[in-house]
Image (cartoon, rainbow, N blue to C red):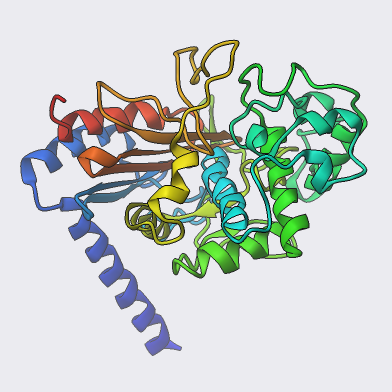
Length: 375
Protein backbone atom coordinates (compact mmCIF):
# COMPACT_ATOMS: atom_id res chain seq x y z
CA UNK A 1 0.00 0.00 0.00
CA UNK A 2 2.81 2.41 0.93
CA UNK A 3 4.66 1.89 -2.35
CA UNK A 4 1.43 2.41 -4.33
CA UNK A 5 0.75 5.69 -2.53
CA UNK A 6 4.34 6.76 -3.06
CA UNK A 7 4.17 6.01 -6.78
CA UNK A 8 0.90 7.93 -7.03
CA UNK A 9 2.44 10.91 -5.23
CA UNK A 10 5.51 10.88 -7.47
CA UNK A 11 3.34 10.72 -10.60
CA UNK A 12 1.32 13.72 -9.36
CA UNK A 13 4.51 15.68 -8.71
CA UNK A 14 5.83 14.86 -12.20
CA UNK A 15 2.52 15.83 -13.82
CA UNK A 16 2.40 19.05 -11.84
CA UNK A 17 5.98 19.89 -12.82
CA UNK A 18 5.28 19.20 -16.48
CA UNK A 19 2.21 21.42 -16.38
CA UNK A 20 4.18 24.15 -14.63
CA UNK A 21 6.91 23.99 -17.25
CA UNK A 22 4.33 24.20 -20.02
CA UNK A 23 2.85 27.23 -18.29
CA UNK A 24 6.17 29.04 -18.47
CA UNK A 25 6.20 28.83 -22.26
CA UNK A 26 9.18 29.72 -24.37
CA UNK A 27 8.60 33.44 -24.83
CA UNK A 28 9.30 34.87 -21.40
CA UNK A 29 8.17 38.51 -21.97
CA UNK A 30 4.84 37.34 -23.36
CA UNK A 31 4.54 34.72 -20.64
CA UNK A 32 4.96 37.41 -17.99
CA UNK A 33 2.23 39.47 -19.70
CA UNK A 34 -0.09 36.47 -19.71
CA UNK A 35 0.66 35.76 -16.07
CA UNK A 36 -0.34 39.31 -15.21
CA UNK A 37 -3.66 38.95 -17.07
CA UNK A 38 -4.64 35.89 -15.06
CA UNK A 39 -2.95 36.73 -11.75
CA UNK A 40 -6.28 37.42 -10.02
CA UNK A 41 -7.22 33.74 -10.47
CA UNK A 42 -4.28 32.37 -8.49
CA UNK A 43 -5.68 30.48 -5.50
CA UNK A 44 -5.30 27.20 -3.65
CA UNK A 45 -8.83 27.26 -2.26
CA UNK A 46 -11.14 28.93 -4.80
CA UNK A 47 -12.54 27.74 -8.13
CA UNK A 48 -10.68 29.07 -11.12
CA UNK A 49 -9.84 28.32 -14.73
CA UNK A 50 -7.68 26.40 -17.17
CA UNK A 51 -5.94 28.54 -19.80
CA UNK A 52 -4.33 27.46 -23.06
CA UNK A 53 -2.66 29.51 -25.78
CA UNK A 54 -1.57 27.83 -29.02
CA UNK A 55 0.54 29.77 -31.53
CA UNK A 56 1.66 28.33 -34.85
CA UNK A 57 0.54 24.88 -33.77
CA UNK A 58 2.55 24.92 -30.52
CA UNK A 59 1.46 25.45 -26.94
CA UNK A 60 3.01 28.67 -25.71
CA UNK A 61 1.05 28.97 -22.46
CA UNK A 62 -0.88 26.39 -20.48
CA UNK A 63 -1.79 26.82 -16.86
CA UNK A 64 -4.40 25.91 -14.29
CA UNK A 65 -5.67 28.37 -11.70
CA UNK A 66 -7.64 27.49 -8.60
CA UNK A 67 -9.27 24.19 -7.66
CA UNK A 68 -11.76 21.78 -9.19
CA UNK A 69 -14.04 21.78 -6.12
CA UNK A 70 -14.13 22.91 -2.51
CA UNK A 71 -14.17 19.41 -1.01
CA UNK A 72 -10.95 17.95 -2.42
CA UNK A 73 -9.20 21.25 -3.29
CA UNK A 74 -7.63 19.40 -6.21
CA UNK A 75 -5.68 21.86 -8.39
CA UNK A 76 -7.02 22.55 -11.87
CA UNK A 77 -4.67 21.30 -14.59
CA UNK A 78 -4.64 20.39 -18.28
CA UNK A 79 -6.52 17.14 -17.58
CA UNK A 80 -9.39 18.80 -15.71
CA UNK A 81 -12.72 18.35 -17.49
CA UNK A 82 -15.11 21.31 -17.52
CA UNK A 83 -18.67 21.52 -18.74
CA UNK A 84 -18.29 23.31 -22.08
CA UNK A 85 -21.85 24.66 -22.18
CA UNK A 86 -22.49 26.24 -25.59
CA UNK A 87 -18.96 25.56 -26.82
CA UNK A 88 -20.58 22.13 -27.30
CA UNK A 89 -22.43 23.52 -30.34
CA UNK A 90 -19.37 23.27 -32.63
CA UNK A 91 -19.22 19.53 -31.93
CA UNK A 92 -22.96 19.15 -32.60
CA UNK A 93 -22.51 21.01 -35.87
CA UNK A 94 -19.56 18.78 -36.79
CA UNK A 95 -21.67 15.67 -36.12
CA UNK A 96 -24.32 16.94 -38.56
CA UNK A 97 -21.65 17.82 -41.13
CA UNK A 98 -20.20 14.33 -40.90
CA UNK A 99 -23.63 12.88 -41.70
CA UNK A 100 -23.86 15.23 -44.69
CA UNK A 101 -20.38 14.11 -45.74
CA UNK A 102 -21.59 10.49 -45.67
CA UNK A 103 -24.65 11.31 -47.77
CA UNK A 104 -27.04 10.41 -44.96
CA UNK A 105 -28.39 13.96 -44.55
CA UNK A 106 -28.74 17.18 -46.54
CA UNK A 107 -28.64 20.75 -45.26
CA UNK A 108 -31.91 21.53 -47.08
CA UNK A 109 -33.82 18.62 -45.54
CA UNK A 110 -36.82 19.68 -43.49
CA UNK A 111 -37.49 18.96 -39.86
CA UNK A 112 -40.55 16.99 -40.94
CA UNK A 113 -38.36 14.84 -43.21
CA UNK A 114 -36.46 13.60 -40.17
CA UNK A 115 -39.40 13.58 -37.75
CA UNK A 116 -42.56 12.88 -39.81
CA UNK A 117 -44.78 13.33 -36.75
CA UNK A 118 -43.52 16.87 -36.16
CA UNK A 119 -46.23 19.55 -36.59
CA UNK A 120 -46.75 21.18 -39.97
CA UNK A 121 -44.76 24.26 -39.02
CA UNK A 122 -41.63 22.09 -39.05
CA UNK A 123 -41.95 21.78 -42.83
CA UNK A 124 -40.53 25.29 -43.13
CA UNK A 125 -37.45 24.56 -40.98
CA UNK A 126 -34.33 23.13 -42.62
CA UNK A 127 -31.28 21.54 -41.06
CA UNK A 128 -29.36 24.64 -42.18
CA UNK A 129 -31.82 26.85 -40.27
CA UNK A 130 -31.17 24.83 -37.14
CA UNK A 131 -27.41 25.07 -37.58
CA UNK A 132 -27.26 28.82 -38.08
CA UNK A 133 -29.99 29.81 -35.59
CA UNK A 134 -32.56 30.99 -38.12
CA UNK A 135 -35.20 28.33 -37.37
CA UNK A 136 -37.41 30.51 -35.18
CA UNK A 137 -38.10 27.58 -32.85
CA UNK A 138 -39.60 28.49 -29.51
CA UNK A 139 -37.12 28.49 -26.63
CA UNK A 140 -37.61 25.32 -24.65
CA UNK A 141 -36.55 27.12 -21.48
CA UNK A 142 -39.70 29.25 -21.82
CA UNK A 143 -41.93 26.25 -22.47
CA UNK A 144 -40.81 24.06 -19.57
CA UNK A 145 -43.28 23.19 -16.84
CA UNK A 146 -42.25 24.17 -13.33
CA UNK A 147 -38.96 22.62 -12.35
CA UNK A 148 -37.45 23.38 -8.94
CA UNK A 149 -33.75 24.27 -9.10
CA UNK A 150 -33.46 24.78 -5.34
CA UNK A 151 -33.27 21.11 -4.42
CA UNK A 152 -30.27 18.81 -3.86
CA UNK A 153 -28.76 17.44 -7.06
CA UNK A 154 -29.84 13.87 -6.30
CA UNK A 155 -33.46 15.08 -6.33
CA UNK A 156 -33.14 17.65 -9.11
CA UNK A 157 -35.54 17.10 -11.99
CA UNK A 158 -33.82 17.89 -15.28
CA UNK A 159 -35.42 18.18 -18.69
CA UNK A 160 -34.18 15.61 -21.22
CA UNK A 161 -33.69 15.97 -24.98
CA UNK A 162 -36.74 13.86 -25.82
CA UNK A 163 -38.87 16.08 -23.56
CA UNK A 164 -37.63 19.17 -25.41
CA UNK A 165 -38.77 17.63 -28.69
CA UNK A 166 -42.20 16.83 -27.23
CA UNK A 167 -42.58 20.41 -25.98
CA UNK A 168 -41.79 21.71 -29.46
CA UNK A 169 -44.30 19.30 -30.99
CA UNK A 170 -46.97 20.84 -28.80
CA UNK A 171 -46.39 24.26 -30.40
CA UNK A 172 -48.21 25.44 -33.51
CA UNK A 173 -45.80 28.01 -34.90
CA UNK A 174 -42.31 29.46 -34.75
CA UNK A 175 -41.34 32.84 -33.31
CA UNK A 176 -40.76 34.12 -36.85
CA UNK A 177 -40.73 32.79 -40.37
CA UNK A 178 -37.75 30.38 -40.66
CA UNK A 179 -34.81 32.03 -42.39
CA UNK A 180 -36.12 35.58 -41.98
CA UNK A 181 -34.34 36.45 -38.73
CA UNK A 182 -31.53 35.28 -36.46
CA UNK A 183 -32.18 34.30 -32.86
CA UNK A 184 -29.81 32.20 -30.77
CA UNK A 185 -31.56 28.88 -30.19
CA UNK A 186 -30.68 26.21 -27.67
CA UNK A 187 -33.85 24.45 -28.84
CA UNK A 188 -32.39 24.17 -32.34
CA UNK A 189 -29.20 22.51 -31.12
CA UNK A 190 -31.04 20.08 -28.85
CA UNK A 191 -33.04 19.08 -31.93
CA UNK A 192 -29.84 18.72 -33.97
CA UNK A 193 -28.53 16.24 -31.41
CA UNK A 194 -31.75 14.26 -31.85
CA UNK A 195 -31.37 14.47 -35.63
CA UNK A 196 -27.93 12.87 -35.30
CA UNK A 197 -29.46 10.11 -33.20
CA UNK A 198 -32.34 9.49 -35.62
CA UNK A 199 -30.26 9.52 -38.81
CA UNK A 200 -27.24 7.58 -37.48
CA UNK A 201 -29.17 5.02 -35.46
CA UNK A 202 -26.85 5.66 -32.51
CA UNK A 203 -27.28 7.79 -29.44
CA UNK A 204 -25.91 11.30 -29.84
CA UNK A 205 -23.24 10.64 -27.22
CA UNK A 206 -22.16 7.41 -28.87
CA UNK A 207 -21.94 9.05 -32.29
CA UNK A 208 -19.77 11.83 -30.85
CA UNK A 209 -17.57 9.30 -29.08
CA UNK A 210 -17.02 7.07 -32.11
CA UNK A 211 -16.82 9.64 -34.90
CA UNK A 212 -15.11 12.56 -33.18
CA UNK A 213 -13.67 11.84 -29.75
CA UNK A 214 -12.10 8.44 -30.44
CA UNK A 215 -11.10 9.47 -33.95
CA UNK A 216 -9.14 12.42 -32.53
CA UNK A 217 -7.97 10.56 -29.39
CA UNK A 218 -10.02 12.92 -27.20
CA UNK A 219 -10.44 10.00 -24.84
CA UNK A 220 -11.59 11.92 -21.75
CA UNK A 221 -14.19 14.06 -23.53
CA UNK A 222 -17.79 12.98 -22.99
CA UNK A 223 -21.39 14.02 -23.54
CA UNK A 224 -22.33 13.58 -19.91
CA UNK A 225 -25.48 11.70 -18.94
CA UNK A 226 -26.05 11.14 -15.24
CA UNK A 227 -26.20 7.43 -14.44
CA UNK A 228 -24.95 6.40 -17.90
CA UNK A 229 -21.34 7.64 -17.89
CA UNK A 230 -18.97 9.67 -15.77
CA UNK A 231 -16.68 12.64 -16.07
CA UNK A 232 -13.11 11.91 -15.07
CA UNK A 233 -11.05 14.64 -13.40
CA UNK A 234 -14.23 16.66 -13.15
CA UNK A 235 -14.44 20.33 -12.28
CA UNK A 236 -17.60 21.42 -10.47
CA UNK A 237 -19.29 24.74 -11.08
CA UNK A 238 -19.42 27.51 -8.47
CA UNK A 239 -21.10 30.85 -7.84
CA UNK A 240 -19.81 33.52 -5.47
CA UNK A 241 -21.86 34.26 -2.39
CA UNK A 242 -21.32 36.37 0.70
CA UNK A 243 -18.10 35.27 2.32
CA UNK A 244 -17.19 32.55 -0.12
CA UNK A 245 -18.42 30.19 -2.80
CA UNK A 246 -21.42 27.97 -3.38
CA UNK A 247 -21.26 24.86 -5.56
CA UNK A 248 -23.80 25.41 -8.35
CA UNK A 249 -22.96 22.63 -10.73
CA UNK A 250 -26.26 21.54 -12.25
CA UNK A 251 -29.59 23.14 -13.12
CA UNK A 252 -32.90 21.94 -14.52
CA UNK A 253 -31.52 22.45 -18.07
CA UNK A 254 -28.10 20.86 -17.57
CA UNK A 255 -29.05 17.41 -18.90
CA UNK A 256 -29.71 18.36 -22.53
CA UNK A 257 -26.86 17.39 -24.83
CA UNK A 258 -26.72 19.04 -28.25
CA UNK A 259 -26.83 22.57 -26.90
CA UNK A 260 -24.30 22.24 -24.09
CA UNK A 261 -23.73 18.80 -22.58
CA UNK A 262 -20.07 18.05 -23.38
CA UNK A 263 -17.26 17.99 -20.81
CA UNK A 264 -13.68 18.37 -22.01
CA UNK A 265 -10.18 19.47 -20.99
CA UNK A 266 -7.31 21.52 -22.35
CA UNK A 267 -5.52 18.30 -23.32
CA UNK A 268 -8.40 17.11 -25.47
CA UNK A 269 -9.29 20.51 -26.88
CA UNK A 270 -5.70 20.82 -28.09
CA UNK A 271 -6.45 17.80 -30.29
CA UNK A 272 -9.73 19.37 -31.45
CA UNK A 273 -7.91 22.56 -32.41
CA UNK A 274 -5.30 20.56 -34.33
CA UNK A 275 -8.02 18.65 -36.19
CA UNK A 276 -9.66 21.91 -37.24
CA UNK A 277 -6.33 23.32 -38.37
CA UNK A 278 -5.33 20.18 -40.30
CA UNK A 279 -8.85 19.41 -41.64
CA UNK A 280 -8.67 15.94 -40.14
CA UNK A 281 -12.42 15.25 -40.09
CA UNK A 282 -13.60 17.34 -43.05
CA UNK A 283 -11.61 18.97 -45.82
CA UNK A 284 -11.49 22.72 -46.33
CA UNK A 285 -14.34 22.75 -48.86
CA UNK A 286 -16.60 20.66 -46.63
CA UNK A 287 -15.91 23.01 -43.71
CA UNK A 288 -16.80 26.07 -45.77
CA UNK A 289 -20.55 26.07 -44.92
CA UNK A 290 -19.72 26.19 -41.20
CA UNK A 291 -17.55 29.25 -41.77
CA UNK A 292 -19.96 31.12 -44.05
CA UNK A 293 -21.95 33.77 -42.15
CA UNK A 294 -25.72 33.66 -42.45
CA UNK A 295 -27.34 36.85 -43.75
CA UNK A 296 -31.05 36.87 -42.80
CA UNK A 297 -33.20 39.62 -44.35
CA UNK A 298 -34.04 41.14 -40.96
CA UNK A 299 -30.40 41.86 -40.17
CA UNK A 300 -27.20 40.23 -38.90
CA UNK A 301 -26.80 38.25 -35.67
CA UNK A 302 -25.76 39.88 -32.43
CA UNK A 303 -23.19 38.57 -30.00
CA UNK A 304 -23.83 38.76 -26.24
CA UNK A 305 -24.10 42.41 -25.29
CA UNK A 306 -25.81 43.41 -28.51
CA UNK A 307 -22.79 43.94 -30.76
CA UNK A 308 -23.15 42.96 -34.40
CA UNK A 309 -21.80 39.51 -35.11
CA UNK A 310 -21.72 36.82 -37.77
CA UNK A 311 -22.66 33.16 -37.34
CA UNK A 312 -22.06 29.97 -39.32
CA UNK A 313 -22.58 26.45 -38.03
CA UNK A 314 -21.69 26.35 -34.33
CA UNK A 315 -19.28 29.29 -34.64
CA UNK A 316 -19.50 33.05 -34.31
CA UNK A 317 -17.46 34.52 -37.16
CA UNK A 318 -17.19 38.27 -36.64
CA UNK A 319 -13.57 39.46 -36.87
CA UNK A 320 -11.60 41.08 -34.08
CA UNK A 321 -9.64 44.26 -34.87
CA UNK A 322 -9.51 43.23 -38.52
CA UNK A 323 -8.41 39.65 -37.83
CA UNK A 324 -10.45 36.73 -39.13
CA UNK A 325 -11.93 34.85 -36.19
CA UNK A 326 -14.06 31.80 -35.36
CA UNK A 327 -15.18 31.69 -31.75
CA UNK A 328 -17.82 30.70 -29.26
CA UNK A 329 -18.66 31.20 -25.63
CA UNK A 330 -20.35 28.96 -23.09
CA UNK A 331 -22.43 29.96 -20.08
CA UNK A 332 -24.25 27.60 -17.74
CA UNK A 333 -24.76 27.20 -14.01
CA UNK A 334 -21.31 27.59 -12.42
CA UNK A 335 -19.28 27.52 -15.66
CA UNK A 336 -18.01 30.06 -18.18
CA UNK A 337 -15.96 29.01 -21.22
CA UNK A 338 -14.61 30.31 -24.51
CA UNK A 339 -12.60 29.21 -27.52
CA UNK A 340 -11.18 31.91 -29.78
CA UNK A 341 -9.45 30.86 -33.01
CA UNK A 342 -7.62 33.29 -35.31
CA UNK A 343 -6.79 31.14 -38.37
CA UNK A 344 -4.73 33.74 -40.23
CA UNK A 345 -2.65 34.46 -37.14
CA UNK A 346 -2.38 30.76 -36.28
CA UNK A 347 -3.56 31.60 -32.78
CA UNK A 348 -6.00 29.75 -30.51
CA UNK A 349 -7.00 30.75 -27.00
CA UNK A 350 -9.08 28.44 -24.81
CA UNK A 351 -10.31 29.35 -21.33
CA UNK A 352 -12.42 26.97 -19.25
CA UNK A 353 -13.73 28.27 -15.93
CA UNK A 354 -15.69 26.66 -13.10
CA UNK A 355 -16.87 29.95 -11.61
CA UNK A 356 -19.74 32.11 -12.79
CA UNK A 357 -18.19 35.52 -12.13
CA UNK A 358 -15.71 35.48 -15.02
CA UNK A 359 -15.96 36.67 -18.62
CA UNK A 360 -13.45 34.35 -20.36
CA UNK A 361 -13.89 36.03 -23.75
CA UNK A 362 -12.64 39.32 -22.28
CA UNK A 363 -9.53 37.58 -20.94
CA UNK A 364 -9.02 35.80 -24.27
CA UNK A 365 -9.09 39.03 -26.27
CA UNK A 366 -6.49 40.55 -23.95
CA UNK A 367 -4.31 37.56 -24.79
CA UNK A 368 -5.04 38.04 -28.50
CA UNK A 369 -3.82 41.64 -28.27
CA UNK A 370 -0.43 40.35 -27.16
CA UNK A 371 0.03 37.97 -30.08
CA UNK A 372 -1.78 39.55 -33.03
CA UNK A 373 -0.03 42.22 -35.05
CA UNK A 374 -2.04 45.03 -36.62
CA UNK A 375 -3.61 43.74 -39.88
